[in-house]
Length: 171
Image 1: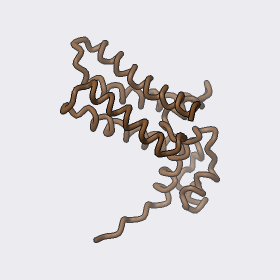
Image 2: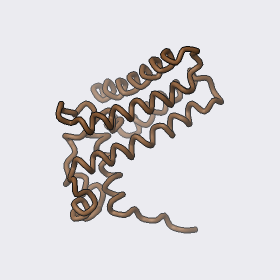
Image 3: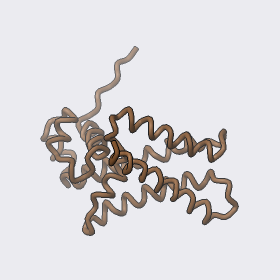
Image 4: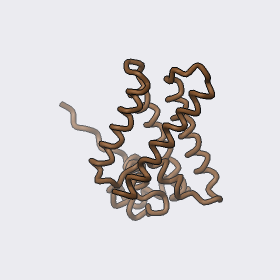
């Protein structure tokens, strides 16, 4: 049996950043915290991410965003009704939130709440992630009207992200 290969420092930093963003958003996540969480040498930050924290956050968000369509496709696999898939999606999200102690939500949602009007690159990244997730869900909905599928899918995303926000408030 082969031992799991250790992550390269760059990957350690991205994973640690993704986790920190899920807990604290962008403004609550500092480079020192990321380095401590990752176990990577601080020089790796500047070597791997010459654009600094902005580049690190952007790449971690892209990594996080790529996971969600695969996750959603697992629920919306066509083997259960869309209603059952949505219930399972919310149930799984709630279970994960509780297992994490009520402090880890969606990195995209957490960063979106932190955005300033000057953060157009990150805003576009977050918007694209939400749009992609909605497209995945919409493709499985039974409504004949494309706009109705899209609207309902966006509502599912809004409800899921809103549930994270409300749950964090109530912990």
